[in-house]
Length: 423
Image (cartoon, rainbow, N blue to C red; front, side):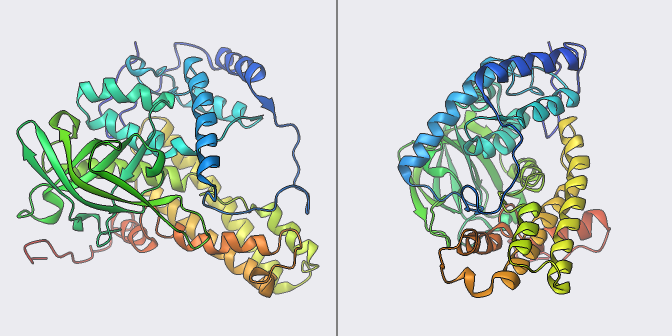
Protein backbone atom coordinates (compact mmCIF):
# COMPACT_ATOMS: atom_id res chain seq x y z
CA UNK A 1 0.00 0.00 0.00
CA UNK A 2 1.25 3.50 -0.84
CA UNK A 3 2.60 5.50 2.07
CA UNK A 4 0.68 8.61 3.17
CA UNK A 5 2.75 11.72 3.43
CA UNK A 6 1.65 14.09 6.20
CA UNK A 7 2.45 17.43 4.60
CA UNK A 8 0.28 20.35 3.54
CA UNK A 9 -0.29 18.82 0.14
CA UNK A 10 -1.06 15.45 1.67
CA UNK A 11 0.09 13.39 -1.29
CA UNK A 12 2.37 10.36 -0.99
CA UNK A 13 5.97 10.41 -2.16
CA UNK A 14 6.61 9.58 -5.78
CA UNK A 15 6.32 5.82 -6.26
CA UNK A 16 7.20 4.11 -9.51
CA UNK A 17 7.66 0.50 -8.39
CA UNK A 18 3.99 -0.55 -8.61
CA UNK A 19 3.69 -0.27 -12.41
CA UNK A 20 6.20 0.90 -14.98
CA UNK A 21 5.46 4.08 -16.90
CA UNK A 22 5.46 2.10 -20.16
CA UNK A 23 2.90 -0.38 -18.85
CA UNK A 24 0.82 2.46 -17.43
CA UNK A 25 0.84 4.32 -20.75
CA UNK A 26 -0.43 1.20 -22.50
CA UNK A 27 -3.18 0.83 -19.87
CA UNK A 28 -4.27 4.46 -20.15
CA UNK A 29 -4.18 4.51 -23.95
CA UNK A 30 -6.32 1.38 -24.12
CA UNK A 31 -8.92 3.04 -21.90
CA UNK A 32 -9.03 6.25 -23.95
CA UNK A 33 -9.12 4.36 -27.23
CA UNK A 34 -12.18 2.48 -26.00
CA UNK A 35 -13.98 5.37 -24.29
CA UNK A 36 -13.06 8.69 -25.92
CA UNK A 37 -12.89 10.29 -29.34
CA UNK A 38 -9.43 11.10 -30.76
CA UNK A 39 -8.82 14.80 -31.34
CA UNK A 40 -6.99 14.36 -34.59
CA UNK A 41 -4.66 17.01 -36.00
CA UNK A 42 -6.52 20.19 -35.06
CA UNK A 43 -5.23 23.39 -36.59
CA UNK A 44 -6.66 26.83 -35.91
CA UNK A 45 -8.17 28.41 -39.00
CA UNK A 46 -9.51 31.94 -38.96
CA UNK A 47 -13.27 32.10 -39.46
CA UNK A 48 -13.88 28.40 -38.78
CA UNK A 49 -15.90 27.12 -35.81
CA UNK A 50 -17.11 29.08 -32.81
CA UNK A 51 -15.52 32.47 -32.27
CA UNK A 52 -16.22 32.58 -28.52
CA UNK A 53 -13.09 33.40 -26.53
CA UNK A 54 -14.34 34.11 -23.01
CA UNK A 55 -12.73 33.22 -19.69
CA UNK A 56 -15.82 32.50 -17.60
CA UNK A 57 -18.73 30.18 -18.33
CA UNK A 58 -21.71 31.84 -19.98
CA UNK A 59 -24.26 29.00 -19.79
CA UNK A 60 -27.93 28.68 -19.07
CA UNK A 61 -28.88 26.69 -15.98
CA UNK A 62 -30.03 23.84 -18.23
CA UNK A 63 -26.72 23.77 -20.14
CA UNK A 64 -24.78 23.93 -16.89
CA UNK A 65 -26.60 20.95 -15.36
CA UNK A 66 -26.30 18.91 -18.56
CA UNK A 67 -22.56 19.58 -18.75
CA UNK A 68 -22.19 18.72 -15.06
CA UNK A 69 -23.98 15.40 -15.52
CA UNK A 70 -21.79 14.50 -18.51
CA UNK A 71 -18.66 15.54 -16.61
CA UNK A 72 -19.64 13.39 -13.62
CA UNK A 73 -20.23 10.35 -15.79
CA UNK A 74 -16.80 10.70 -17.40
CA UNK A 75 -15.08 11.32 -14.05
CA UNK A 76 -16.62 8.15 -12.59
CA UNK A 77 -15.48 6.05 -15.52
CA UNK A 78 -12.00 7.51 -15.27
CA UNK A 79 -11.83 6.94 -11.51
CA UNK A 80 -13.17 3.40 -11.68
CA UNK A 81 -10.50 2.61 -14.28
CA UNK A 82 -7.79 3.84 -11.88
CA UNK A 83 -6.95 6.89 -13.99
CA UNK A 84 -8.32 9.77 -11.92
CA UNK A 85 -6.13 10.26 -8.82
CA UNK A 86 -2.76 8.79 -9.64
CA UNK A 87 -0.80 10.44 -6.83
CA UNK A 88 -3.43 9.85 -4.13
CA UNK A 89 -3.10 7.35 -1.27
CA UNK A 90 -4.49 3.94 -2.14
CA UNK A 91 -6.69 3.78 0.97
CA UNK A 92 -8.71 6.70 -0.40
CA UNK A 93 -8.93 5.52 -4.00
CA UNK A 94 -5.63 6.83 -5.37
CA UNK A 95 -2.88 4.73 -6.91
CA UNK A 96 0.18 6.02 -5.07
CA UNK A 97 2.02 6.65 -8.35
CA UNK A 98 4.53 9.36 -9.17
CA UNK A 99 5.21 12.36 -11.34
CA UNK A 100 6.17 10.39 -14.44
CA UNK A 101 2.81 8.62 -14.42
CA UNK A 102 0.97 11.95 -14.04
CA UNK A 103 2.84 13.38 -17.01
CA UNK A 104 2.16 10.30 -19.11
CA UNK A 105 -1.57 10.53 -18.40
CA UNK A 106 -1.68 14.26 -19.19
CA UNK A 107 0.05 13.67 -22.51
CA UNK A 108 -2.35 10.87 -23.47
CA UNK A 109 -5.42 12.88 -22.42
CA UNK A 110 -4.37 15.75 -24.70
CA UNK A 111 -5.06 13.57 -27.76
CA UNK A 112 -8.71 12.86 -26.95
CA UNK A 113 -12.04 14.60 -26.57
CA UNK A 114 -14.15 14.01 -23.45
CA UNK A 115 -16.70 15.95 -21.34
CA UNK A 116 -15.38 19.09 -19.66
CA UNK A 117 -14.08 18.67 -16.12
CA UNK A 118 -14.09 22.35 -15.11
CA UNK A 119 -16.84 21.83 -12.51
CA UNK A 120 -14.43 19.71 -10.47
CA UNK A 121 -11.43 22.05 -10.63
CA UNK A 122 -11.91 23.63 -7.19
CA UNK A 123 -12.73 20.37 -5.45
CA UNK A 124 -9.84 18.43 -6.98
CA UNK A 125 -7.23 21.17 -7.00
CA UNK A 126 -7.96 22.94 -3.69
CA UNK A 127 -10.46 21.24 -1.39
CA UNK A 128 -9.34 17.60 -1.66
CA UNK A 129 -5.69 18.39 -0.80
CA UNK A 130 -6.91 20.35 2.24
CA UNK A 131 -9.18 17.52 3.39
CA UNK A 132 -6.34 15.05 3.01
CA UNK A 133 -3.96 17.22 5.01
CA UNK A 134 -6.25 18.51 7.79
CA UNK A 135 -9.52 16.54 8.10
CA UNK A 136 -10.43 13.87 10.61
CA UNK A 137 -10.24 10.23 9.44
CA UNK A 138 -14.06 10.18 9.36
CA UNK A 139 -14.22 13.11 6.93
CA UNK A 140 -11.39 11.77 4.80
CA UNK A 141 -13.21 8.45 4.47
CA UNK A 142 -16.51 10.13 3.70
CA UNK A 143 -15.44 12.70 1.14
CA UNK A 144 -12.06 12.11 -0.48
CA UNK A 145 -13.08 9.23 -2.70
CA UNK A 146 -16.42 10.92 -3.47
CA UNK A 147 -14.75 14.20 -4.50
CA UNK A 148 -12.08 12.51 -6.58
CA UNK A 149 -14.69 10.32 -8.30
CA UNK A 150 -16.94 13.29 -9.12
CA UNK A 151 -19.81 12.08 -6.94
CA UNK A 152 -19.46 15.17 -4.73
CA UNK A 153 -18.68 18.66 -6.05
CA UNK A 154 -16.96 21.14 -3.74
CA UNK A 155 -16.66 24.93 -3.57
CA UNK A 156 -14.57 27.39 -1.58
CA UNK A 157 -16.19 29.88 0.82
CA UNK A 158 -13.49 32.40 1.68
CA UNK A 159 -14.12 35.94 0.39
CA UNK A 160 -16.63 38.27 2.03
CA UNK A 161 -18.04 41.69 1.07
CA UNK A 162 -15.52 43.41 3.38
CA UNK A 163 -12.77 40.77 3.23
CA UNK A 164 -11.47 39.77 -0.17
CA UNK A 165 -7.73 39.46 -0.47
CA UNK A 166 -7.49 40.52 3.19
CA UNK A 167 -8.78 37.12 4.25
CA UNK A 168 -7.88 37.72 7.88
CA UNK A 169 -10.63 40.38 7.98
CA UNK A 170 -13.50 37.91 7.68
CA UNK A 171 -16.61 38.43 9.83
CA UNK A 172 -18.54 35.15 9.38
CA UNK A 173 -18.94 33.71 12.89
CA UNK A 174 -18.89 30.12 14.13
CA UNK A 175 -20.02 29.52 17.72
CA UNK A 176 -19.73 26.20 19.48
CA UNK A 177 -22.85 24.44 20.70
CA UNK A 178 -21.85 21.13 22.27
CA UNK A 179 -20.55 18.84 19.55
CA UNK A 180 -21.74 21.20 16.82
CA UNK A 181 -20.91 24.66 15.54
CA UNK A 182 -23.45 27.27 14.43
CA UNK A 183 -22.33 29.45 11.52
CA UNK A 184 -23.75 32.85 10.54
CA UNK A 185 -22.45 35.21 7.89
CA UNK A 186 -22.07 35.92 4.20
CA UNK A 187 -19.58 34.84 1.53
CA UNK A 188 -19.16 36.24 -1.96
CA UNK A 189 -17.58 35.42 -5.34
CA UNK A 190 -18.10 31.69 -4.72
CA UNK A 191 -17.58 29.86 -8.01
CA UNK A 192 -19.80 26.83 -8.57
CA UNK A 193 -21.79 27.20 -5.33
CA UNK A 194 -25.01 26.71 -7.32
CA UNK A 195 -24.19 23.07 -8.05
CA UNK A 196 -21.81 22.19 -5.18
CA UNK A 197 -22.53 19.58 -2.50
CA UNK A 198 -19.95 20.65 0.09
CA UNK A 199 -18.03 23.83 0.81
CA UNK A 200 -14.81 24.63 2.63
CA UNK A 201 -15.54 27.67 4.79
CA UNK A 202 -13.33 29.84 6.94
CA UNK A 203 -14.96 31.45 9.97
CA UNK A 204 -14.09 33.63 12.93
CA UNK A 205 -14.30 31.69 16.19
CA UNK A 206 -12.40 34.01 18.57
CA UNK A 207 -13.06 37.67 17.70
CA UNK A 208 -11.00 38.83 20.69
CA UNK A 209 -7.79 37.33 19.28
CA UNK A 210 -5.53 38.91 16.61
CA UNK A 211 -7.02 38.47 13.15
CA UNK A 212 -4.89 35.57 11.93
CA UNK A 213 -5.19 33.65 15.21
CA UNK A 214 -8.94 33.48 15.76
CA UNK A 215 -10.16 31.68 12.65
CA UNK A 216 -11.35 28.10 12.18
CA UNK A 217 -12.03 26.12 9.01
CA UNK A 218 -14.96 23.75 8.43
CA UNK A 219 -16.44 21.55 5.74
CA UNK A 220 -20.16 22.29 5.38
CA UNK A 221 -23.08 20.67 3.58
CA UNK A 222 -24.21 23.13 0.86
CA UNK A 223 -27.70 21.58 0.99
CA UNK A 224 -28.07 22.09 4.75
CA UNK A 225 -30.85 24.28 6.21
CA UNK A 226 -29.73 27.89 6.41
CA UNK A 227 -27.50 27.85 3.31
CA UNK A 228 -28.79 30.18 0.58
CA UNK A 229 -27.01 30.64 -2.76
CA UNK A 230 -27.73 33.70 -4.90
CA UNK A 231 -26.16 34.18 -8.36
CA UNK A 232 -24.10 37.27 -9.18
CA UNK A 233 -24.24 38.72 -12.69
CA UNK A 234 -20.84 39.18 -14.32
CA UNK A 235 -19.90 42.08 -16.58
CA UNK A 236 -19.93 39.60 -19.48
CA UNK A 237 -23.53 38.58 -18.74
CA UNK A 238 -23.08 35.16 -17.14
CA UNK A 239 -23.55 34.06 -13.52
CA UNK A 240 -20.84 31.59 -12.59
CA UNK A 241 -20.14 33.42 -9.31
CA UNK A 242 -22.43 33.56 -6.30
CA UNK A 243 -22.99 35.12 -2.92
CA UNK A 244 -23.79 32.67 -0.14
CA UNK A 245 -25.77 33.52 2.99
CA UNK A 246 -25.44 31.35 6.10
CA UNK A 247 -28.13 31.54 8.80
CA UNK A 248 -27.71 29.27 11.84
CA UNK A 249 -26.04 26.57 9.76
CA UNK A 250 -25.13 23.67 12.02
CA UNK A 251 -21.89 21.76 11.42
CA UNK A 252 -20.61 18.79 13.46
CA UNK A 253 -17.25 19.30 15.14
CA UNK A 254 -15.97 16.26 13.24
CA UNK A 255 -16.17 18.41 10.10
CA UNK A 256 -13.71 20.93 11.47
CA UNK A 257 -10.50 21.14 9.42
CA UNK A 258 -7.52 21.55 11.70
CA UNK A 259 -7.46 23.02 15.19
CA UNK A 260 -9.87 25.51 16.69
CA UNK A 261 -8.49 28.99 15.91
CA UNK A 262 -5.93 27.32 13.63
CA UNK A 263 -7.79 28.08 10.42
CA UNK A 264 -5.13 30.37 8.98
CA UNK A 265 -2.63 27.55 8.45
CA UNK A 266 -5.40 25.44 6.89
CA UNK A 267 -6.34 28.35 4.62
CA UNK A 268 -2.74 28.61 3.43
CA UNK A 269 -2.89 24.99 2.25
CA UNK A 270 -5.95 25.81 0.15
CA UNK A 271 -4.60 29.14 -1.11
CA UNK A 272 -1.28 27.69 -2.23
CA UNK A 273 -3.08 24.94 -4.10
CA UNK A 274 -5.49 27.50 -5.54
CA UNK A 275 -2.64 29.56 -6.95
CA UNK A 276 -1.04 26.39 -8.28
CA UNK A 277 -4.30 25.52 -10.05
CA UNK A 278 -4.83 29.01 -11.48
CA UNK A 279 -1.21 29.92 -12.20
CA UNK A 280 -0.43 26.53 -13.71
CA UNK A 281 -3.32 26.75 -16.17
CA UNK A 282 -4.35 29.02 -19.01
CA UNK A 283 -6.80 30.67 -16.63
CA UNK A 284 -9.56 29.93 -19.09
CA UNK A 285 -7.95 32.07 -21.81
CA UNK A 286 -9.05 30.44 -25.06
CA UNK A 287 -7.51 33.27 -27.10
CA UNK A 288 -4.16 31.59 -27.75
CA UNK A 289 -1.09 33.17 -29.27
CA UNK A 290 -1.74 31.46 -32.62
CA UNK A 291 -5.14 33.11 -32.81
CA UNK A 292 -3.61 36.47 -31.93
CA UNK A 293 -1.12 36.19 -34.79
CA UNK A 294 -3.87 35.13 -37.20
CA UNK A 295 -6.02 38.08 -36.12
CA UNK A 296 -3.18 40.46 -36.95
CA UNK A 297 -2.74 38.69 -40.29
CA UNK A 298 -6.48 38.87 -41.03
CA UNK A 299 -6.49 42.61 -40.32
CA UNK A 300 -3.34 43.07 -42.43
CA UNK A 301 -1.50 44.51 -39.42
CA UNK A 302 1.52 42.22 -39.31
CA UNK A 303 3.68 44.91 -40.92
CA UNK A 304 2.58 47.52 -38.36
CA UNK A 305 5.63 47.84 -36.05
CA UNK A 306 3.54 48.71 -33.00
CA UNK A 307 1.21 45.74 -33.50
CA UNK A 308 4.13 43.39 -34.26
CA UNK A 309 5.86 44.47 -31.04
CA UNK A 310 2.68 43.99 -29.01
CA UNK A 311 1.97 40.54 -30.45
CA UNK A 312 5.59 39.45 -30.03
CA UNK A 313 5.57 40.62 -26.41
CA UNK A 314 2.47 38.53 -25.63
CA UNK A 315 3.87 35.46 -27.41
CA UNK A 316 7.29 35.63 -25.71
CA UNK A 317 5.97 36.29 -22.21
CA UNK A 318 3.35 33.57 -22.53
CA UNK A 319 6.02 31.07 -23.53
CA UNK A 320 8.29 32.07 -20.63
CA UNK A 321 5.35 31.75 -18.21
CA UNK A 322 4.51 28.29 -19.57
CA UNK A 323 8.09 27.07 -19.06
CA UNK A 324 8.15 28.46 -15.52
CA UNK A 325 4.82 26.76 -14.80
CA UNK A 326 6.20 23.41 -15.98
CA UNK A 327 9.01 23.68 -13.46
CA UNK A 328 6.68 24.68 -10.63
CA UNK A 329 4.04 22.06 -11.42
CA UNK A 330 6.72 19.35 -11.48
CA UNK A 331 7.29 20.10 -7.79
CA UNK A 332 3.56 19.92 -7.08
CA UNK A 333 3.19 16.59 -8.86
CA UNK A 334 6.14 15.27 -6.88
CA UNK A 335 4.17 15.91 -3.69
CA UNK A 336 5.86 19.14 -2.62
CA UNK A 337 3.89 22.05 -1.20
CA UNK A 338 3.26 24.80 -3.77
CA UNK A 339 5.43 27.74 -2.78
CA UNK A 340 5.68 31.44 -3.60
CA UNK A 341 6.63 30.56 -7.18
CA UNK A 342 2.92 29.90 -7.74
CA UNK A 343 2.24 33.52 -6.83
CA UNK A 344 4.68 34.44 -9.61
CA UNK A 345 2.82 32.10 -11.96
CA UNK A 346 -0.55 33.57 -11.07
CA UNK A 347 0.78 37.11 -11.42
CA UNK A 348 2.32 36.26 -14.82
CA UNK A 349 -1.01 34.85 -15.98
CA UNK A 350 -2.97 37.98 -15.18
CA UNK A 351 -0.31 40.37 -16.44
CA UNK A 352 -0.09 38.48 -19.73
CA UNK A 353 -3.87 38.54 -19.96
CA UNK A 354 -3.78 42.29 -19.47
CA UNK A 355 -1.22 42.64 -22.27
CA UNK A 356 -3.41 40.49 -24.50
CA UNK A 357 -6.38 42.75 -23.81
CA UNK A 358 -4.35 45.85 -24.66
CA UNK A 359 -3.19 44.39 -27.98
CA UNK A 360 -6.73 43.29 -28.89
CA UNK A 361 -8.09 46.73 -28.05
CA UNK A 362 -5.42 48.43 -30.15
CA UNK A 363 -6.13 46.18 -33.16
CA UNK A 364 -9.92 46.01 -33.03
CA UNK A 365 -10.89 49.43 -31.73
CA UNK A 366 -14.62 50.12 -32.28
CA UNK A 367 -15.21 46.52 -33.41
CA UNK A 368 -15.08 45.53 -29.73
CA UNK A 369 -18.20 47.57 -28.93
CA UNK A 370 -20.12 47.52 -32.21
CA UNK A 371 -21.15 44.15 -33.65
CA UNK A 372 -20.53 44.14 -37.40
CA UNK A 373 -21.33 40.44 -37.69
CA UNK A 374 -17.78 39.65 -38.75
CA UNK A 375 -16.32 36.46 -37.27
CA UNK A 376 -13.92 36.94 -34.37
CA UNK A 377 -14.36 40.68 -33.95
CA UNK A 378 -17.12 41.71 -31.52
CA UNK A 379 -16.85 38.35 -29.73
CA UNK A 380 -13.35 39.31 -28.59
CA UNK A 381 -14.81 41.83 -26.15
CA UNK A 382 -15.74 38.96 -23.84
CA UNK A 383 -12.12 38.17 -23.08
CA UNK A 384 -11.23 41.86 -22.72
CA UNK A 385 -14.05 42.24 -20.17
CA UNK A 386 -13.11 39.01 -18.36
CA UNK A 387 -9.44 39.77 -17.77
CA UNK A 388 -9.96 42.25 -14.87
CA UNK A 389 -11.73 39.52 -12.90
CA UNK A 390 -8.70 37.26 -13.23
CA UNK A 391 -6.65 39.93 -11.46
CA UNK A 392 -8.81 39.33 -8.38
CA UNK A 393 -9.35 35.54 -8.49
CA UNK A 394 -7.02 33.61 -6.20
CA UNK A 395 -5.62 36.79 -4.66
CA UNK A 396 -5.21 40.22 -6.20
CA UNK A 397 -2.13 41.23 -8.15
CA UNK A 398 -1.18 43.46 -5.23
CA UNK A 399 -1.28 40.53 -2.78
CA UNK A 400 0.79 38.41 -5.18
CA UNK A 401 3.39 41.18 -5.42
CA UNK A 402 3.62 41.38 -1.64
CA UNK A 403 4.17 37.61 -1.41
CA UNK A 404 6.92 37.71 -4.01
CA UNK A 405 8.52 40.76 -2.40
CA UNK A 406 8.50 39.34 1.13
CA UNK A 407 9.02 35.60 0.60
CA UNK A 408 11.19 35.55 -2.52
CA UNK A 409 13.11 38.83 -2.49
CA UNK A 410 13.28 39.11 1.30
CA UNK A 411 12.05 42.71 1.40
CA UNK A 412 10.59 44.17 4.63
CA UNK A 413 7.01 43.18 5.35
CA UNK A 414 4.21 45.62 4.81
CA UNK A 415 2.79 46.92 8.15
CA UNK A 416 -0.37 45.05 9.18
CA UNK A 417 -2.99 46.19 11.66
CA UNK A 418 -4.31 43.47 13.99
CA UNK A 419 -7.77 43.29 15.51
CA UNK A 420 -6.58 44.89 18.77
CA UNK A 421 -5.32 47.92 16.85
CA UNK A 422 -1.63 47.08 17.10
CA UNK A 423 0.58 46.69 14.05
